[in-house]
Length: 170
Image (tube, rainbow, N blue to C red; front, side, top):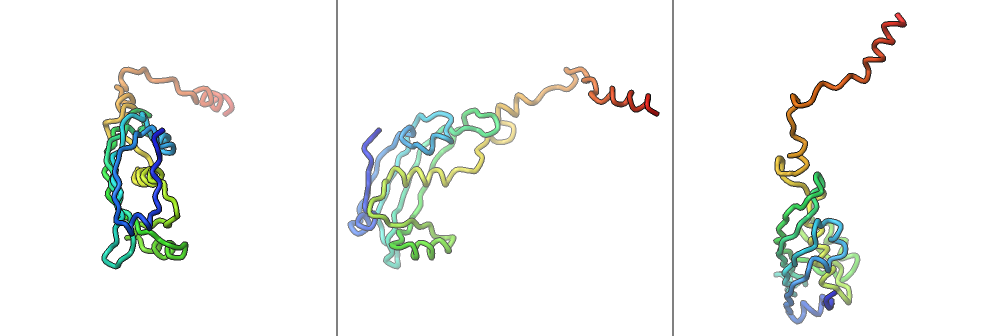
């Protein structure tokens, strides 16, 4: 496990700092449930900025590729990560609630210590679809399910016995 990078987000913005690095996919604990294989890494850059109204934001950029688990066939599904987002830093719970009411603003609570790895992992998870699947026709399970019905004999109707019993009773 690599050394975790923890910041005071408001101080980070005040100093207009920038930090960048790479995180192996194996470091993301919660993301493991979505991955088919945990090979690869995410490149990231986080910058402290003030918007045109003087409000503190963290600008987070990340990119990389990962093998997600297809929910249809359980095989590997290549997924590109290319995220560039700006997160408003809310100083209080009330400020966060107000920011959450606006769908055009993404906000987080500015805690004294913010773990950058956790923030990046959260943003990646939020960017994923609910059920990752191959496109129609590309999935291994879909390909295996295609078969020629003529190859299979007509199965015996399981209700044929009931039909004969019904005839006997009448």
